[in-house]
Image (tube, rainbow over all chains, first blue to last red; front, side, top):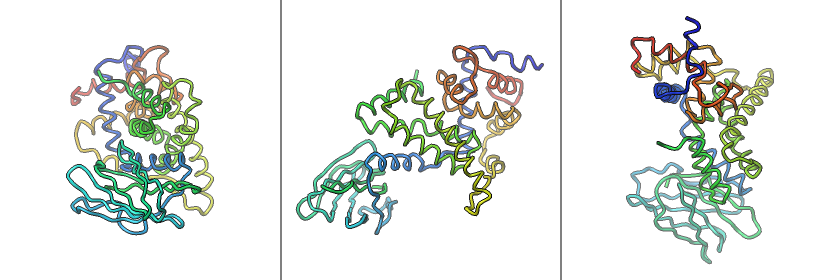
Amino acid sequence: MAEDTYSGADAPMDAADERILAQLATLYATVDPVPFDLVDRIDFAIAVAELEADIAELTRGDLVGMRSEETDSVTFTSGSLSLMVTTVRSAHHVRIDGWVTSPGAEVDVVGEGVTRTVTADVTGRFALEEIPRGRAHFVVRREGYRPVITPSMEI
Amino acid sequence: MNTSLGAQAASAFIAYRDGDRGQLRTLVTLLTPLLWHTARSQNATKEVAEDAIQTAWLRLVDAADTIADPKGVVSWLVITVKRESWRLLRLAGRDVTSDLGVPETVDETTPEDLAITSDQQRLLWGHVNDLPERCRTLLRVIAFAPSPDYAGVAASLGMPVGSIGPTRGRCLAKLRTLLLSDPSWEA
């Protein structure tokens, strides 16, 4: 019987093996799921490391927007820099109206699968249309400073 | 058929190295379940698993250009997560005597039983737990890297299965035998 138990160890994998492994994956995903935000946090850690950026803190608003709300406003701060972002939602897209305390700064919106860049005007205002809804973070670049990256938020 | 995990990972990694930064997120999304269960199969607590995985990705970003064969990216990450989990666990073990308050263990038994909702899963869980620990470790990880990546991932864990090709290996053969001889199991 002990021999039977191990028989087939050298046989090629077949469809039954694949099914067992697939069910095993489902089982382990059930009993010990990957934390839901782990991918986001890894992504963020990589972005910070790649940019050698300073991390801005949320100083007003909520990162997990109420989906029912059409508009939302949040403020991020890092040192002397502040970034205020207002989002206006339609069915699938978001318009972003922003203001940054550094006129002429470049602002990236890094969403799911898209990165869009805009330059703030002389008053520090900027706007971006048609950003897909989902999670996004912002990167602000200024001459002579390290980039500033915000935590990701629901837009 | 769908492309294997290893092939998808290799093409995302190549695209990332060629300058498509967004492909890194694709790679992270693709491989995080495998890496999570790699770390957890090494008895890493959830915190240690997260730290080990995050560190492995940051190292990959640093070392991206030094990885000669893009097809090796999955193995590279599995090995790094395994080693980093061990290193962090050793550190945590030392810290247990200090006053840093690192929790020594995470309860591993009851929540798992509670999470299982179907009879089929309960049956599988029962048979898996009848296997030797070494087999549970191996199968838990390779479940997230099915053939043809199975053999490479098993080797990265230091648990090679068979000499050539995607053979079943003793652990899967054993589980298969247990399941197929159980009349309640619906194959």
